[in-house]
Length: 492
Image (cartoon, rainbow, N blue to C red):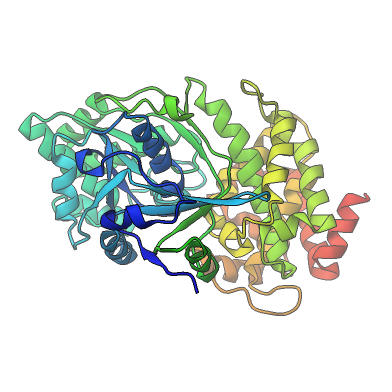
């Protein structure tokens, strides 16, 4: 039985020698960033880049203060406080596993109703960046138009109660009001979610929400704050029993370890109103062409994840690597990407669309990354409009094939019926699951009914070539099943 060392500041010297520990003195760190939505991805990605800078003796006044606005954030904070905000990162490489402990996070704001502690922390002058990872569907947008949804109950609440907001955006606005009134000045809002033009989306949400209660403050935010676009990339599975056992195999007692692949990428627009860390010295890229990197990643990696995860879950395959080992799922991914997606993706420095597809196929196939199909298929109502529909729209505009993308959309409808091919139930896997399930059931005999959800499909539902292909594949899936439909698609 391996003796476990509890992860805390005072035990870092006792951590087994094979595990890297911070070489910098954490007591000398001071805060510069508040990060809202502090989950596994942030700790494996943005926090890691900052940790690397600190290992170089840099960015010691840019340490991270974690934050959250939901009930589950209270539990996360309690676990992190116990271990002095340290995180064990375990790199899952097919050749070998390795572990390191990162220390770039130094605090976690108390999670309270009304979010007063968060507002007050963001209002202090040492905080120069407020970053977010709150999921693609968390920005209160109409999925079809991309415009701000002022009718959402959360936005209605925060507009009426600007001093006691329930959302991260309401809290940011309240903090900016305090900063403006005190002469502290603005901060940079840094979105780290998988959204095309995510900086612009964050800006629109903040300014639009502020304008519902305070026009002058909205104008001030729009004029003085900055919102750089960014593209983030690293596959980071959820933490479960397997990951907890894995960290213990390294001799560490960590309640919230994080596993991740060896690949990381972070491309950022250099637009920071209050300064920034030199993340590029740790491997990030500052570029004015973030849009091209975003398109490549969102269309190929995130879109590819949607294609294989729903297919795999319908067939009872539990992991993404298991999907890649399935002959027809992998062929569906390759064929659709090469014919219908890649032609509308621009190359970026040192990477063509075809070479990126080859790269992600290898990443998806890594058996050490136990990333579940259920996790990756979550929130199709945000991810289909974000990752699949744009490829359909471009292909239709350019007179290109859309057969595989139409099949992907039919697979989404089939997934929302809530049963696998073997008859087992798919538990609700979308914030809008009840509505999606109802529409899917109503569309079994009339598949075109599914396309009437204009909040997802917009005007492409009226395009006869897409509509006809979608109906054809929806009927095929209903009559022949997923496996036979894939064979028909691949041998047409």
